[in-house]
Length: 625
Image (cartoon, rainbow, N blue to C red; front, side, top):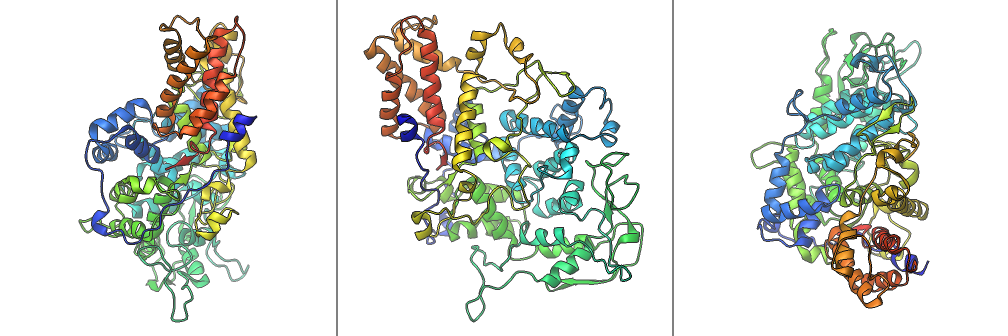
């Protein structure tokens, strides 16, 4: 327990040095290809689901700026509907057909059947993209947007129709490098969003029944998705009146007027407006369709602009696009979206100058275009605060890792693959498919599974700690990095190394398939391997890799081999930046492991597993600098 106490420290500081004086001319840096391992590792922590050795080498060969350009312009599943890239929805359907072959024989069956566990297939598709997708930056930005434009399958009807979640994630991934205005439009018409924020089946005011349009989506579209509660300057600071009071960005009247715009939209194929059967031909993965009989055609005035009266027609009216244009042009959108991307990718407490530089790029990409997300993402990642070491070396800089991202980084580092042969809930054999069962109950997160529209954590969360309070610093991820979650995260890492690691599996099973065949959909079905670590440790120990670990009881040789192992794992997991006291503490613990003379290989594997485990659960790993 002593080593656990030493390494499983209270995670301290996740902010950034507040330096509002940084000149705009210094906003982009690190365009040289001459970067070291730590610098390559850093951009990969910010822009992927975890650095891998091949990607570190690629970044070093290209340089940060060129690597980002390559990612921004790489092919994706949305370039063609017939190429080898599969969208989230396409992969979701393929997994569902494999898991429930008698239920889902054709694509049409997805509109006629539902079950609470179909959301598992969306999670499996998400992990395939996150863990193995070549378009890592696109997928990482899509995750960031899923935490701004939130829908969820947690305790919601969407969990019964995983296709609604998969198609919604496709909207985010497809538009991650597109234009924010287009993203707003597709999100507003999404069936998943319509169901989640209850504007699906929204009806115009009825005086006889005294019913009014649902205001849920209208409010969150402004408050959470685009402009926030208070008017902002370009640097994200509040605009205040002559008395020093912040000025609200919208009013209740604005919400009521915008709600009128969102009337008349319903699930495509729905037999009764506003109702949901979750089957019977309803197309939950298609945009909502318009029904003129329930739409409010009268003029609407909100955010200081008026949308004129339109005549009734079966065609969709222009008021939704007009309303989105009004919101899109609001002065808050640039700093609101820019700050969100900075905090999800780079640092919890960006300077006002950093926010201003990114917002400026949102407002005008240099060619007169507003909302160009490709340029915004580039501005976020190439900014001086994202690249220069004077910021990453500052104690208040950086961010806590989301538990989900800490997990994906660990899994990618150790060559994760899906187990072949486990059984679905219909007892079908699953091959090439991941299963991460109820991950939100283990680490507090799973993609598209937040408890509310406010995301897994509040952007303004301040830990109950004097350092954060006195320095006016936020650390959003600490809201879910609770003691319980961190312990469960530790247990998940331990089981991954002891139960789901290839060499541990083969010690007790004839094959990986033999192991998988006894596992159901209620298990975590993946495996990792520490083959390279075993070879590195044994070569340093014995000078060979024959698997006997002959000198493990020689303390001098064991200590030297442990040092070699730790240096290797340091580069693999921490970019070569692990503090010296970690080396000391880990070496002490690992040297005290002794399995006797007859269990050399088992001792070696446990030395490696403990080294990995304590590094991954340490405060240094759980902070992104």
